[in-house]
Image (tube, rainbow, N blue to C red):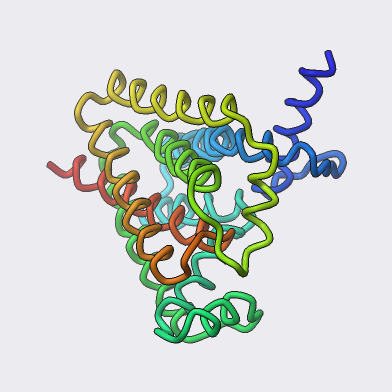
Length: 257
């Protein structure tokens, strides 16, 4: 019973940490942080299912495509409490400054919003809006978005487990403490399951869409690690936002074929 309680608490912590979903009470146990990040992909499952449900409601009520696209573009950000978008903006600002490692780490901690952050925010919002608008017009294989949200968070969890942490990060080492082999296997199994279910649901289109998420995440994280010599919470948000945008774009393109 204590075993089950520990994992339920870890999942509850994941909801409190990675979403803005109202919860009845606050829970934080540092010894459960490894369990919390292990359940990160399940948070993606919730975000994706909410997106799918809202999309079906919008289409059922005949909401215009443009307005539906705006709503569906921002829903993932609202559910996540903008935590990943904040990391994306901070990392963009630091990376595009092309300064020394010490200066870039300082920019990550700076609460002020720089010009590069704003420019990159506009770019990702336009790209995602354009993709979602195309998806809203075709309305095919919408449930693949659930896979997009799950896979992006699997990648983030595995990054914490396996990649080095940069010197300015307190967040990533905290989440990685106490990680066991079972946690890693669990995330890998979720990743494989998501890929398999997407293939059974949409055939090669499912693999292409989730493959775009994997490629987008890998390239973004590679760029971030080269710039910061390790990962941090902000860098995870940076790669996650880019990977999900790639997934939306791939789904829109494949639907248009």
